[in-house]
Length: 136
Image 1: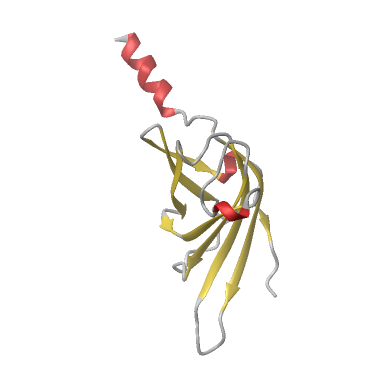
Image 2 (image 1 turned 45 degrees about the vertical axis):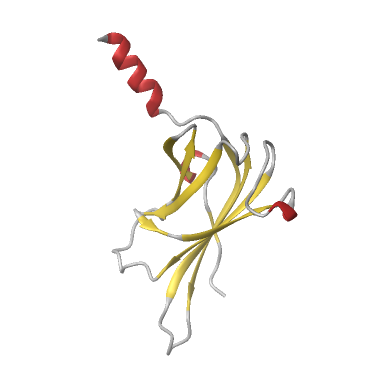
């Protein structure tokens, strides 16, 4: 029984597959007639595994899905493919978030990824603090 408990607790901890270098958050709003608003996130990270083993599957903020794109900053011609040690830029956009009551602390993005056929979640809070941009 103890062995089963140890194995289950071992699998709950995500593997060390990325290191956050920088993360920014920028709130924006459209023109008066547009009435759209959102939050743009940029996350710069270094991967410790290649895209053959590590796949990004989602970016969420407070359980709300974001549209996102991945750019290989080390090898721009590779697109979303990457190798161990490459620096990636993840641009995520949370459009028209629901009107939530003001919070003391802004929510952090959470990266969903698969590694060795298992799904993991990595909160940016585990990396470095999110810096907040100013509205233009």
